[in-house]
Length: 116
Image (cartoon, rainbow, N blue to C red; front, top):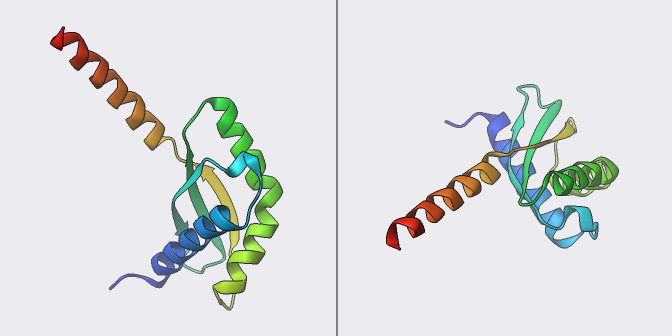
């Protein structure tokens, strides 16, 4: 059986994705993908992991976008997700997708070199 904190984290990440897609007009957050979330056992805090395809500059823009939009995102998400305690949201960059993309590019370049 899945723990309650995991179910809540999945629900929060899904709702944040919807808010980013349909309600936020901040250009700094337009290319952001929500990877997942981890809620604490007591549901007082929740880390939300995101990814951005781009440079370090794009990542910093997204971090600043989350800082300025955090309260709005929290209000929108928890108007739909009814919990007794509203967790404090923190947004953390997850670079795994960026690294995987870079590795795939290296492999593709290597394979192209073999075909010539």
